[in-house]
Length: 325
Figure 1 (tube, rainbow, N blue to C red):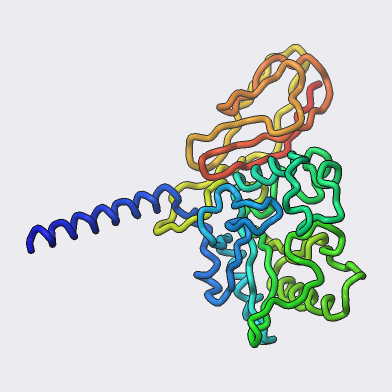
Figure 2 (cartoon, helix red, strand yellow):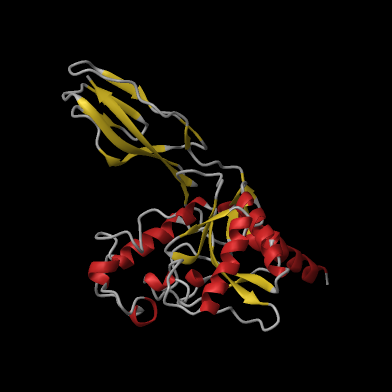
């Protein structure tokens, strides 16, 4: 009997240890929440956790069928849902926070012209190689997504009496003009349904995305130009890590032929790695991964560039310029 109790206790301790380790490995950042903790009656249909999406497979870093948002966005969503419940509807969520790894997965898919297994369902009228490929156009896929900042959500509404989604005139994630707000080729009922969702979301403090009836972003989103990386999964704890925030907006001028050095700085949990995201530095200058811009400028002019500060939690981008006299 004692051996049995001892074995059971050891098993329970092992399970607790493993769960604790999992929670610490994928702890939810302190300013984020699970949507259903704030809006318990929201229906989740997380498409990127399934194979029913435009890629046709589960998307990277969707480790659980969960919706995560910043606290501010979740509280605003609660207000929208309460408004809709008064009209006989509730929210169904397709996607919320989206890890950068998932966006990278979309980019790889979009760049492969031979992978067209979902064409019939999601982009029947488009040529993927010329109209969807993100190397040609960012109309449908881009290297950075507002979802990754944590305050954007894709959703629809469900009739509470029937349990059926209302008819919006096009499916979620359908690539084409019919998915845009203001599209005239849908019925009056479909237009009215879109307006119900739009009105509730705007009244709660969200902005619409003109090309997608399902896509809304909190107006006063807390993270500007910060793109998070943590995976979507269950967590029993909150993370003490903080994302990098570049805390300056201007760069000192330089002069041709004169040595230049600037050490970039940011808040956030170390280690932080610096890279040049886009644009270019003046000839003669370079930036190392520690955030030091140095060298001897060789060309006069004004140079625009975007830097990226990264830690394990997120990337923060900042557009800057330097003038060399």
